[in-house]
Length: 270
Length: 117
Image (tube, rainbow over all chains, first blue to last red; front, side, top):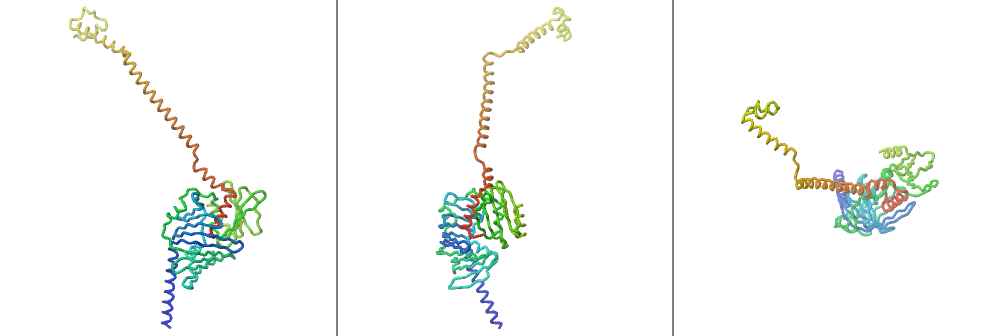
């Protein structure tokens, strides 16, 4: 009995150490790859991208459905096309970044070894993530299931990347830019509390407005209306609203959740 | 010299004949000296010197006015440049006045290339 227990402990320890090593490799590797991202749910979308990834930086060239380049460097984000890059006020996170974030925050829920590859499961409030990582620490596939929407990222080809960020940035003419995309800071603050959003245009009276439907990180639904003039926003019976007026714009935040409303109010009062 | 007689002579109490020889000599020296002082007191520079001095004064004034004009031009150019060249202040204000279309396009783009927050 004692021997079985000791052997079990050794086996568990060995598996844990082995798993740790390929996760460490995955987190610290630099690689280049071509990948396809698909999203299936209420709306379907797909992207084809070339990715240059370093442990802390990233350059992504979106090939389809439109041609665009975005990069993460020293904690800030820029997007655009060669010779016309601007700082993105919002973070741009792909499925890989979201998986790494949840992996660090929540930890691994389950690990399996299948055909010489590792299947890593992270079950978090931001979604149920499954990643297939090979023994060299390169990702092959990452899937997230969140509120009926399945997002899948599949690497067609992954190669080690020896070039530095600056070399690839020069290739794409990515220059440090001071110009930031015009964006109301209040919406940036609000979107930092959500894990998901959809955006649409609609008319209230004669006024063209933007409706952002978002999932707050607590799970509540949040509606944000952005208008250049004051408008009458219709609410359902249990909903509450706060209004914020900026320089030439009006923002209306509607939710049923009192705590979420309180949090947003505090953010807007900063 | 008899000082008292000398003073009394200058005050007109004594005539020249009433003075002794030594005092008479001193009165003569005194008169010559007064003559020289009078000439020096009524000094008038020569036309050449006057021209040279006046020219120096005019040159100084011209230099001062040239410096004044140059400084005025520089200050005027400085203010014109400040008012004509765009500053960063309007850019900041513009970033706060993002139009509905700009905000929609940017959010749609982030939504398209990103997978959430």
